[in-house]
Length: 366
Image (cartoon, rainbow, N blue to C red; front, side, top):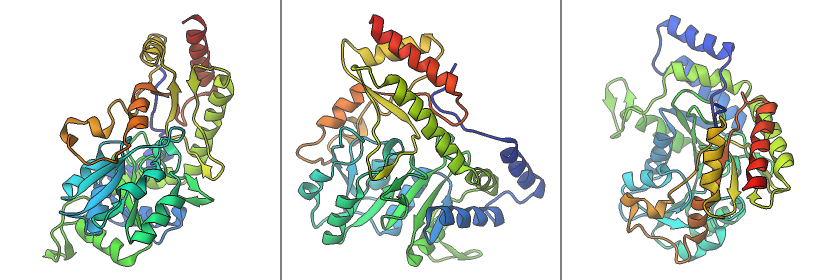
């Protein structure tokens, strides 16, 4: 089976983890701090704070900004559940807006209609590895004194106007789940240029402990381990190599599938660097063509996935959450049409050619 996504693990990665295991120092420590320094250096930010997963990174970002009851946070409707659930866990209210039909990122034109004196933050999600259009988001946020919290879970290494995402808002959250551009097994990070915010996130991730057994904040245990950090540090050394591999394979798909009128391919805006964490196509509807294509590919040894089959405004637990007046037509349509094809650094070019050949044959004889 050609997998839709997979971690790219080398002998160097394995050695790095084994070295930590042999050291006996497994919890967050020296290796974790080195990972934080190297991640901050790569992103061009002052601080990176490693945590246990991407959801924790989003939640700690909210708490560090003082998001809580009575506040509203603007979130795109088409994203992973954690982007909204962490707002709820902080005690605030998510306000949903629609997405752009080509990049699947936040529709900036809806922001003016939903921001209010209760809006504490806006969360642009850099979905699939393509950055959101931050010009409009940052402009509105500055005018209204609103925080920008970048959701970079799928976008390590992506760039907006030549700058890496993760340092373009007030704070950002990353995920290092096995399907992401680098992995720590499970893991995440909060990045910021603000000293106070970084210090507060460090406190909150470790029970609010300022010194051993002396607690000044009510926090949690959300630390990364040195085991995970060792893997992440090793992967970070070749992150650009892996991103370029993704981009090369994406170009093969784009060249092979660009004549199919039944398929809308991913775009890369002139101001963007797409990292293709996911290669997600839009299948034009013709009697359930998307699902039939997925079934056809599965029967021929190709795994696919739908990111995402249910928009946030249709999630049972989020029923009643406030949304923009014109939300969420594009999001609803995307959920019926998108299909993620196999793409990861371990994939061979012949695998991409095989998948492309199958897709072309499906539409030829459909």
